[in-house]
Amino acid sequence: MRAVVQRVEHASVTVDGIVVGQIGRGLMVLVGVTHGDTNDGAIKLADKLAKLRIFSDEDDKMNLSVVDVEGSVLVISQFTLYGDVRKGNRPSFVDAARPDVAEPCIETVVSELAARGIPVATGRFGADMDVSLLNQGPVTLVIDVE
Image (cartoon, helix red, strand yellow):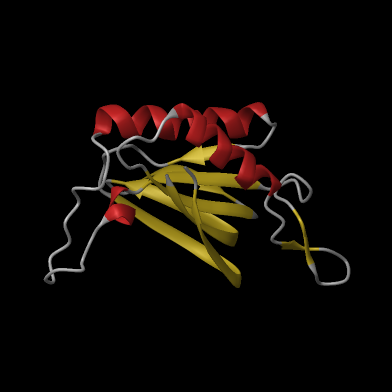
């Protein structure tokens, strides 16, 4: 499982011009699922996101988590994180998991974050989404979880 995490002042996702998910300060997380990923990996990712210390403390050091700052998380499924462009110019998505595998993993990430008391918003699985965000810092990390 792969995630691109951005520290944001705010973020939202729309489908067909309608806002389906939005947050204030927190994390915007694009999540890709590959073959063999399981709910165990999804739980590990949620735990990592909840504890990830990328918010600044009073000394301007990245020591605080999204829980510490009482932030929110916007989770968006993103199969293109497993796009492969090593050969040619058109991405191959053979490493991306099929929806019947990916969607339950994404749902587990969301439910595990919520179980930790973190407000969570989502995109719409499989939809053509427009994402808007204000990346704060900017801080962007790529996390791979097995």
